Image 1 (cartoon, one colour):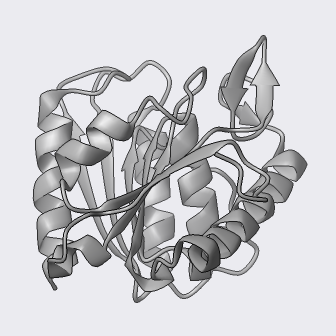
Image 2 (spheres, rainbow, N blue to C red):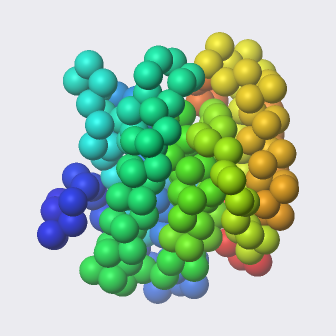
Length: 212
């Protein structure tokens, strides 16, 4: 789907007339994923939500990503900031075209998608109400922290993750705490892979967050 927007994406509107249908999930895949990968996860998290699922524009050995990295765990910060602004503008334009409420859009990101989701919160917080971030790292450290007091965030991290260390995950938690967000962290007995426990934790968190 294009509709004059500059990211390959899919938008699936909620068919429900229930209040929950006002919720929109922004799905952000991991390295090598596409706009199709996380749709089943989005449906499991919130069956009545609208879905905006986006494909990253950067290619790394043919695999889509949301921003460049110099090596594993080392981000190209200039590219990250540019891509964050680009994605934020896409979200703004999408909200106008598809008529969803920016105050009720939750990012659901995995790995590279979680990192761009965290970057959106720190650099362009006006485009998200909150985020579910699976296996996120610190994208960058802002010179000035945004006020995230109205944002709800859950970080879901793996205790045996070879990519995201415990220290790295806790550093991101500290940043979000300092920015005054309503942030929660959950640890799973897993590596970088997603587990059913991740999904259940995220689903429970989303039910509470979207009903408040």
